[in-house]
Image 1 (tube, rainbow, N blue to C red):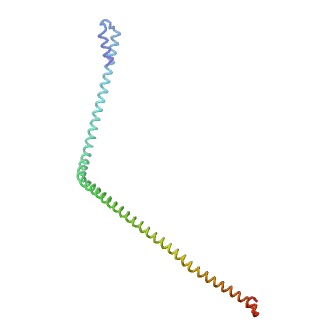
Image 2: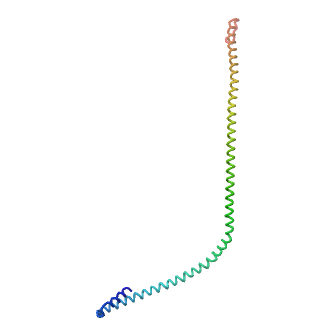
Image 3: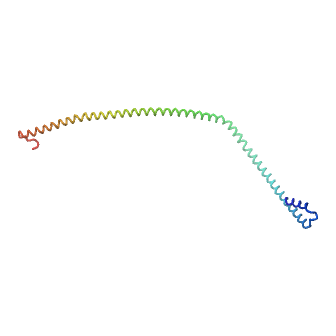
Length: 185
């Protein structure tokens, strides 16, 4: 198209006597070539238009089929949502209420465990003091009993040793007096 416009413009600007028969044939050839290109372009545009029309018909069929299938689904979904919305709201409220109750019970349980823990610590401390006192008193009693038994036993042992020493002395003196022969003979 641009070539044809340029040619025509060149012919109008040019001098009418300057067009020779060789140039006129060449000009006719170019005009024919441009006309042929325009014809091919028109055919391509018509083919694209026909293809677009076929595609448009197919898209319309697909859209209608989608519409036939989607509308019942959308309608049932809307009715289901309308039916379920109050139930979901009730469930949500119940969950919120349950959450508050569980939180309150957890706080009560924590307070109870803290109280039990404090009481247990106090009892353990009392038992520890009681056991410590008992062990200390038992140790003191054992020391007293030990000392109470050891000292008299030492004294008795001392008396027995003294008695034995005295007897040995008497026996050794008696040997010399009467010719007593004791167990050493």
